[in-house]
Length: 65
Image (cartoon, rainbow, N blue to C red):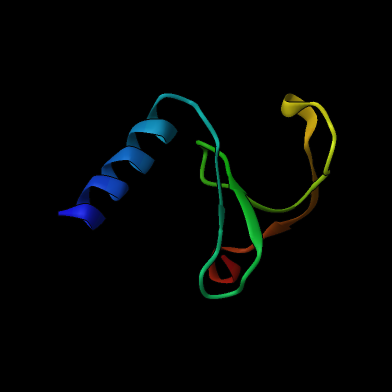
């Protein structure tokens, strides 16, 4: 039930146009996923303002994230 709820919350956020941020459990990369399906490796910027606290390092292929 928990996994289904997480999957639904993820789908709802993306459907609402909100990007999601997570650490990929397979690669260990910090990832931002956009509603359009693109995924990016990011790096968090400690001490930066909340709305600018990361930078995009590269776009990830579907198999990399």
